[in-house]
Amino acid sequence: MTRLYTAQWILPVATPPIRDGAVAVQDGRILAVGPELEVRARLARLGTPEITDLGQAAICPGFVNVHTHLELTALRGRLENLSFFDWIQTLTRLRGEQMSAQDLDIAAQWGVVEAARAGITTMADVGASGAGFRALRRGGLRGIAYQEVFGPDPMQAKKSLASLKRRIEAQRSEETELVRLGVSPHAVYSVSALLFRLVIEYAEREGLAVAIHCAESQAEDDFMRTGQGPFAEFLRARGIVWTPPRTSPIRYLSDLNVLRVKPLLIHAVRATEEDIGLLTFHGTSVAHCPKSNAKFGHGVAPVGRMRRRGVRVGLGTDSVASNNVCDILDEARFAQLLGRAVQADGQWLSADAVLRWMTLDGACALGLDDRIGTLEVGKEADLTGISLAGPHLEPVYDPVTAVVTAATGRDVVLTVVQGRVIYDGQQVQTLDEARLQHHLPSLVAQLSSGAPDAS
Ligand SMILES: [Zn+2]
Image (cartoon, rainbow, N blue to C red):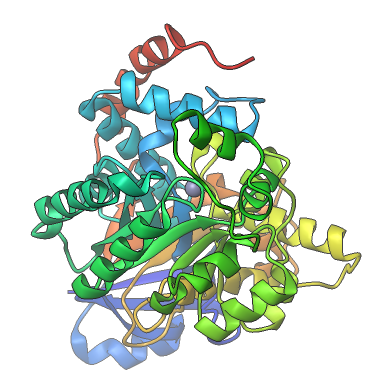
């Protein structure tokens, strides 16, 4: 069966906008893209297609969110105004002590509901529990589910690796064409050099993608350059010897030969010129999460310079515990405006480039650009439909400008992954929204009590 998605505008990203256009989809792939009349004429021999007409709307490639923590969705609004160190400590305690496996599953599925409703079709998710992996599969989204591993004590490295292996092996048979597993050694202050080496060797052997939080904060920089600050004190209090390498976190990972596997580096806020050179040299991708970075007061990643020097940078929301929404339209607009503000350049990044950032650039950062990221014949049919109607959107001179400068995730009216409708503008089709929502008040009660924040 062929299905035709028609709308006032099609924004293929690979080619200019098409007025009164159509995208034809068959067996999960894009069969044709063009003006509706032309597409219909071309497909006439295939019989009468099913038609979904979005009317006054734009259809673009599905949005790619290159950094999330779905299992933390229940903590939206729970960890406000904490220092970064206290935020991590409180988060770890709440996740570890106050959330059952079922709670984490509910949180992750609720996060998928939010993402699908915001037109996000691909997520690169980091988690310690496997809940993100399960939620992506049940929700029908595309993604990479990186399994997190921690262990700052080199004495514990082999044990940490063994537990990671167990988790990966237990889930490996459940990988699908859409959702793959990866590994995520958490960060330079929470993973020993030995554990980094072991995990990277394991990932290489098993063909697993790697993601690492890196160069996010001043505290992390202090830990690396001087051996001072809250992360160093935390290790000292546990009797773990830490000799700072006196380099940047990115240089440290390069020296450990970790960058050879082209990991996705999450944040890179504090990347220096030398660091950017290393990222370019190794072909390392970066997940840019500007709202999370701003919320913590970490600063602004030098994405303008990274992009100019050819680093593949995707946009990520990070968890809703540090954002507090999972909305790539909102994130992209923030990234563009912030970039213009800090570079004092009101022409930095056109609307076309921002749309590409949310779609094709994200796909490139994850190595998925041969399958998704544009609306082109033969690519897999991941589509997002956005309404262009309403007082906050009209008048529309240019559809890309309208989408990038005025629309939010709440204007999304259609989300399709590999030809399957995940959100039809009314309901997420793959998950029971009402059942999940019903669980939230008890989660709030449970996570409010017994675990005061650090304020
Ligand atoms: Zn993160």
